Image (cartoon, rainbow, N blue to C red; front, side):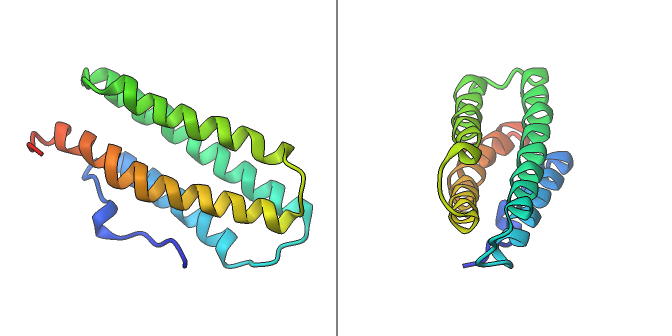
Length: 131
């Protein structure tokens, strides 16, 4: 099932939404190319995702610190957990297609659990919504 940007993923924080959109766009590139067997293409997509994700973390964590977000530690721990897994993908044995499948699964999990959960909780904090 393709991962798509939707309004329910919008936090209302423009820079964060833009970064989430970019990460989802990268995942669509991966999903639109089932059966990739070219290692160069796979490495490029993994590198592109890693770069976008790491940039997102730097920006988002900066904003959280600036706003004294009380749940910063737990949120940053979620970021770190995905980074640890991402760091292992290029070292895993298997075909390029398997690596893409693993990356797609991680992105889907990240969207469903992290954006829809932790990111929306942060957005509620930013916008003063109780929840």
